[in-house]
Length: 128
Picture 1 (cartoon, rainbow, N blue to C red):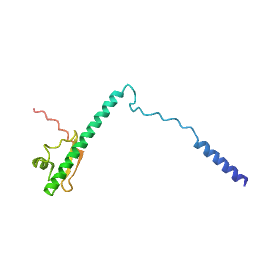
Picture 2: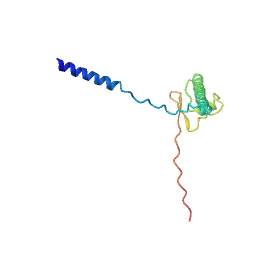
Picture 3: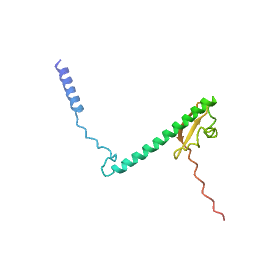
Picture 4: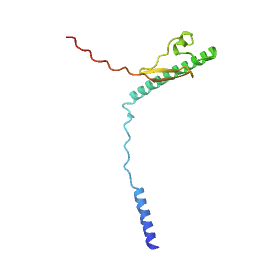
């Protein structure tokens, strides 16, 4: 009985020591929270918020126009340009740089997707 008690006691002390080991404090990542860079951080956050708001508002306008078209015509538009032709929108919707609008005429859903990048141009052969 005594050897089992001693081994259990030793094991529990060992686990206590290992579990209570002091771990080095992790250094906080430099996230730009310096008072020196605060104005630039603020302006960057403002720019991101503006882009997000523009995307959200444009998506809401498109969705609203699609819903109105569906209510009046009892079908979804064939493409987004039909909304312009039928005067549900004033002009074609502009997508942010590097993005394009993806419209599903079956469901009327519209969302932003990454625009495909064009392949690099081949170097011109020199004429001799």
